[in-house]
Length: 241
Image 1 (cartoon, rainbow, N blue to C red):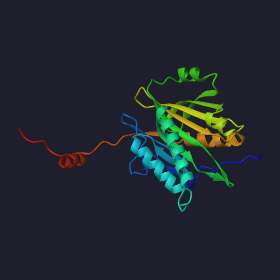
Image 2 (cartoon, one colour):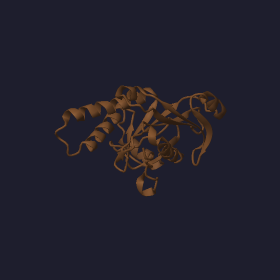
Image 3 (cartoon, rainbow, N blue to C red):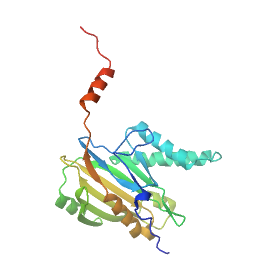
Image 4 (cartoon, helix red, strand yellow):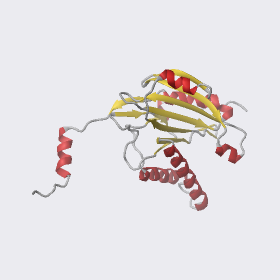
């Protein structure tokens, strides 16, 4: 099979995601529990599904289904199956500690470039040596330095997933994981990229590495005194005793 290369990460093909981008319900996602907010730059045809809370997850899945089935009114069964499948994938991401799920709808030469990215939080202290030591024997693991986010551990591995076995495909999923320490917290941000396209896995991994290289941190904006006063004025006041 001829090797198909994914589109290059040119500025015209990319979009900035959280914290600047917004989801279907008009709110931003990507925040950690503290003062740090993460952001990524992804291809334009990667759709983002915030996983928490549940209502945001369901709203984003509904928006994606609406987009994918725009102008198609005679496939209610297929539409319902697609929605159930997406909700199932999103719920599985939540069970893994995920906060955001990205799904790729990129195409190259008419070939869908199927891929996903799950971003999860691991509540433990990051130690690069311990991280790589723990990952050895389960794929290709190494210490890396991301341009904006700094030190991280990276692992590439292959896995025959339950879904691939169910579909009877002969290919294994290619998985690339990044473990990135959250600044000033005993917490790790985990980026899990995955693609079933084993014949073009190396090209897809180049894309994954490019996206991971855009990860950055910034401090969460603190409310100004003016906005705090406005918020206080809008809040209901209790009765005076």
